[in-house]
Structures are given as C-alpha cells and as structure tokens.
Image 1 (cartoon, rainbow, N blue to C red):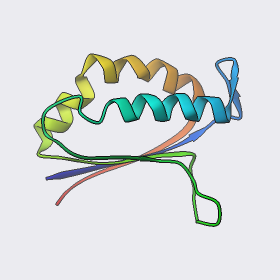
Image 2: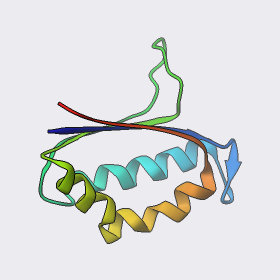
Image 3: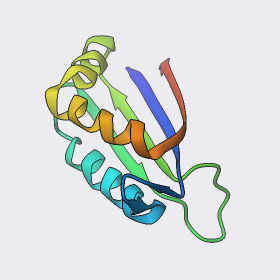
Length: 100
C-alpha cells in the first residue's frame, strides 16, 4: 500500500477569486476524485479547523493499493484538468509518498 499526502498553501488572491473561494473550489474537485480510478483505498480531504494546528490551507491524505494505482490516478484526465487551476492559485505545495 502507498500513502500519498499533499498539503497546499493558497495565494490570498488569484484567478479572480480570494483564497476561501479557491480553496473551496479545489476541495470540491478533490472530493470528486475519491473513486476516480481503481486502487484508491482511502481518500480524505480536509481544511484547517479552528483551535487545531495547521500549516496549510488544504490537505489530501490518500492511500493507494500500489504505485501503479497512484500513477493511474495522477495521469487520469480529470485529475490532470485541475492542475492549471492549482498552479495559478497555489503558492506552496508539500507532498510525501511512502509505502506502508
């Protein structure tokens, strides 16, 4: 099994919208990817919660059956379609993949 964790920090203003609107758009898109390809075992999308520690604006915590499943997800046309939007509105991205 492969764990795939990504944390994004968004620009205050980008793409004609503020941070909150862009985070909401990205969150909705990510949530729609939960069953996008075979081999997705876990798919959790979260935003910061008041009173809890956070260092980003949006987080994806996912698990895939294997590297091939993660690669299929990353290459899927729907996943690829959000990349230009994310490139425009994100100021920082941290990612970690590891095998369990």
